[in-house]
Image (cartoon, rainbow, N blue to C red; front, side, top):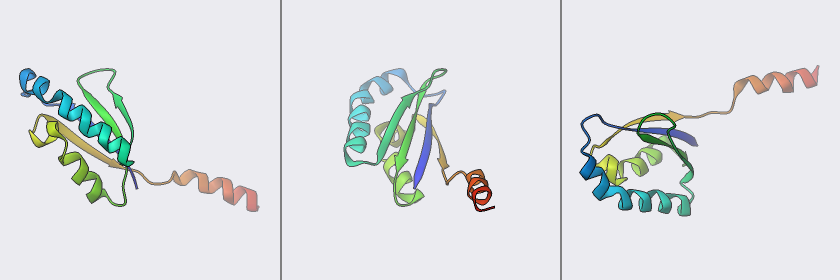
Length: 99
């Protein structure tokens, strides 16, 4: 299951607290990439935050991984989960080919 996770800095997140946890956070995401959980990581063009593309068996596994991240454990980020499914409009292509 692919899940896009949008992580944005909470307005009340302390900058020094974020700075202290930046290396553990980076290492945790790197470890997720090494294990195959994190397929891609992006920064936000506007605002403070990141987007992770995860590959897990279930949404619960995705949430378990994300809640283990240091910034999330310390409640410094707001988290939005966007589970993905195959794009349904492509079914029309298969139907058109059968006609």
